[in-house]
Image (cartoon, rainbow, N blue to C red):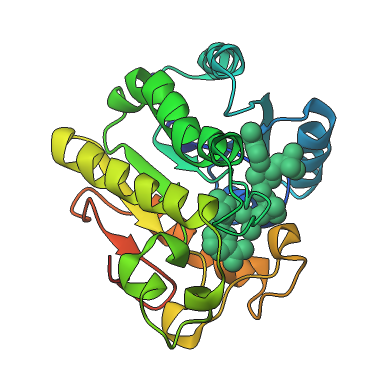
Length: 249
Ligand SMILES: NC(=O)c1ccc[n+]([C@@H]2O[C@H](COP(=O)([O-])OP(=O)(O)OC[C@H]3O[C@@H](n4cnc5c(N)ncnc54)[C@H](OP(=O)(O)O)[C@@H]3O)[C@@H](O)[C@H]2O)c1
């Protein structure tokens, strides 16, 4: 008798050892997906993967520093040991930088933030495109921010309009444009953007990145990330959403 093995949907999430990345890994793992859990620190990644495995999830820890070409190449090799296709890539790893006042900000400070938030997703996307292209309905989810939206940052009602810094918001605005350009150039892969909050209500998710000052839980913040990861073949590409719906550019 012939048996057919139905391959599990697979996802790689960068920066998944904690925060929104970890919550996303947990949610998709509970959907029965195989989760490649990216973490720049090997032991933190293994500890996070072990928590998911203990919870019944098929999780594989992948050491992945998004600022290092060598680390990204090693991550591709490791994932290839498990699968020839990757259904979903979630570029979640991010850094807020030091929130230096614009008049004092240096190129070095900007570069460090861009290396993670802008060049990181480009490095990882480029390296994993062959595995993604081998999937039937490949999806890339970019975790951006309301701070990447010109509409939000120029709205005086939004608290972020009064938070003066250069690096973080401009890095996420660059990520937004990169994603639109990927979506236009590669119609066979869905590229979408998410901010893990509720822009209209000025809400964000409590994680280490904001010293847990967010009004939403990390699980709530992960909801729109999960939704974009689970888009079916008819779903959109090149959109920017939050928990409530579309976000203005
Ligand atoms: N929380 C919110 O409401 C909110 C709002 C807007 C946007 N975001 C975005 O959401 C994403 C996740 O943030 P979070 O709130 O979950 O913060 P978090 O808990 O601080 O998690 C950030 C994750 O990124 C990882 N990371 C940082 N630099 C990395 C690198 N070079 N290589 C690989 N991983 C790296 C961190 O790893 P370590 O543990 O090793 O530091 C950590 O796993 C970020 O892109 C952030 O900009 C969050």
